[in-house]
Image (cartoon, rainbow, N blue to C red; front, side, top):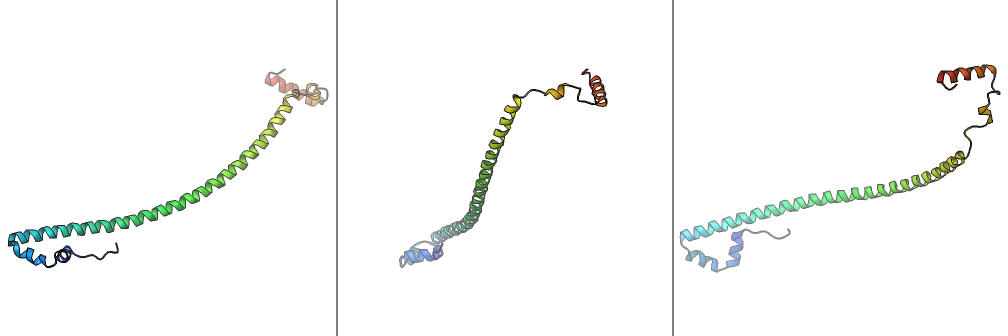
Length: 143
């Protein structure tokens, strides 16, 4: 508020000019006192409103500072979001590459037999290993 401030009495004096004296002379003392009281109440209300305006302007400045801070945080979060989105895209590409390789290997393994000839025949084991395998199968209830 770059306006020059003046009291209500000054304003009234400038507003009424020469008639201000005539008004005050035509009023009785009680009427003049009542008028002065009302003008003072009006002055107090104007002063209160000016105080509220000053307070609201200060609050506006505070809120603007907070808004600027939040804008900065939003910008930083958007940058982080972009970085994380890029990382996610890279991770998904790697996942798809390895998932394809795994599925290919799983498909090849499904076509293979459960075991080969060496795993079914015990004659390639030494006698000690054959006996150990027999004890193991007996203890597990496999023999």
